[in-house]
Image 1 (cartoon, one colour):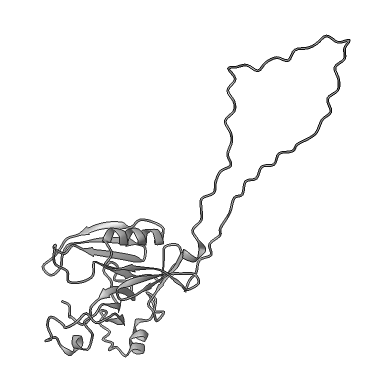
Image 2 (cartoon, one colour):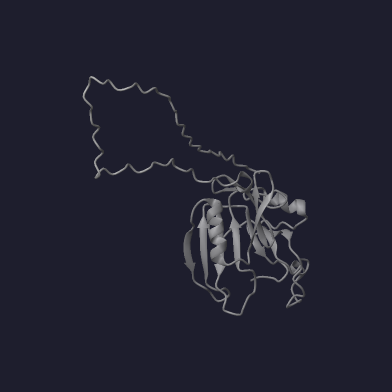
Length: 249
């Protein structure tokens, strides 16, 4: 896990007043009295000055240093390994994207993608090493969670590391992970399998799928895959949510 050191500066302004005592001598009776000119009534008093106030820094224990990809949400983790926030894939797309933008330190590139025969149109939000896809399903119809994420790099934003709960990172050896999890390896360039699976969502709509799908639960999962939507040269990718138990075309 890659942590980030956060420096916190505090500005303290202080002012002191030095008081001195004095002795007043009696007037000389041999000297004519003198008059003291009155200050001009048109003089404008100088405005009071104030010391600049420093912006309040973010508490160190809430600064995100790591993102753990989970089946139904992202865990936002600080440098001490404590989860300081959870970001659900069912969150409003605008809220989800704004939160990721804050964590990664900048806005995404936005691209509208057309629909096809087997998928709806969607909006793609892209940062270096990270993508959020929001598909535009018709009103009243929902086949999955609201957004889907994909991470293609092990470090995103300003030094924020990304991994699964097992510590697998984008770019790590996918074949070794398949062996570790007991998953079949095909070597076609399109290998993918669940790394972590969420709670069961109930009975499948269809139960006539091949054994390839029947062995998986009808549940959202974190997928480790050998391909990605934007750059085929990336060989190891983490994405979520993906339901391996319902079959996909």
